[in-house]
Length: 413
Image (tube, rainbow, N blue to C red):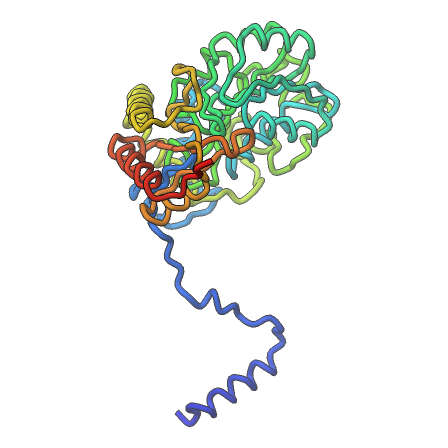
């Protein structure tokens, strides 16, 4: 009580001058942070429903506790259901979809081996760069944004380049294409090649059958249809990849994977997939994120995959009809190749797409985005995934677009 006003200030200054800490506490952290509530109708992340948020807020336990290992077992079962696979080597990587992409490539390919990537958007480009970074011999087949490859084109490219791994994106979120998968696995295996598929934007939103379609490695992400926070990524390796049917297997490599963190020999043990009686510490898993992922997989299981696929298709078609009724055009011309989770709309002629997305965010508190990679400047992207996939969400998007086209500047040129 003897220090007040100016005296207290002087004492505080003196205390700071005597401190060994040269960098003061940041003033920005003295304010309480409150995240804004928005309608997340872009290509991801999507809105996280209260049930999943609540699961992620449960008390933290140890990453090796028996209860945690049981949660991981539940997650494995949920991924097997979502992927439609019986693969034992099924886990969730601690990281986003990019982490799973690297996990797949780093474990499937050794330096000097051949990789073929199908590029019809940004994700084929990313896969090629990752493979190049580990010294693989990378070739690509390329088609225009909004297009996809025929089985004949893939067969010819595999015969020409003879890779050990072929990469294909099932749900190309940068262009809005869902790529046909039937028969491609058989073509790959005819050429003694593994089939790697990215289903980050399609899992739960479009039909996908890992085992039936002969997919050897499949990965996804938590923040799209699953509506969980970003930070966990389902991935599964087929028995073909794990055993000695092929020269390069998970447990019979000439070289160690370039990443210790993503080495599947370690991760398989941590997830109890290697048949060994004891699990060895590898890394501290994101416990709270695993809670959320488990809950999101539980919701998908309760809804049923086929119901989820149907709802996403019907809502996407409702959006497509509304967009075309406004006089706008859809970017993907082939109706059967339109991704049900992320719709690409041709950027309205005469408008600045950035002004449209900014106006919608400011006036409707709603996110839609522009293009990505080869679609930059060409499209608007609307993502309606998981709980966001509803006709009510479509109505909000259409009203926001109508409003933006009324008030945003249109060039007369």
